[in-house]
Amino acid sequence: MPTHTYLCPHHGDFDVSVPFGKEVPKLDACPARTRRAAPEGRWMATCYAPSPWQPPTGVSFKIT
Ligand SMILES: [Zn+2]
Image 1 (cartoon, rainbow, N blue to C red):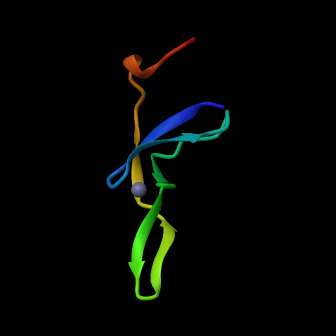
Image 2: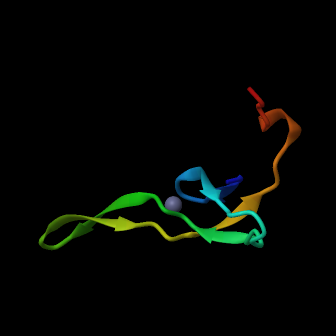
């Protein structure tokens, strides 16, 4: 499955697998888990920040 890179404004880049034949979205939600303060303590939440798709560059391609 090909992977595509997205750039979260808070967590940096992350990879998303997109099945063949499926359109690659230009924005995706960041899957990073983030800590947030809450009155009853700390809890984990998912970032979900809209992250723009990063076009692949020749340098980042590695075929081994
Ligand atoms: Zn994020």
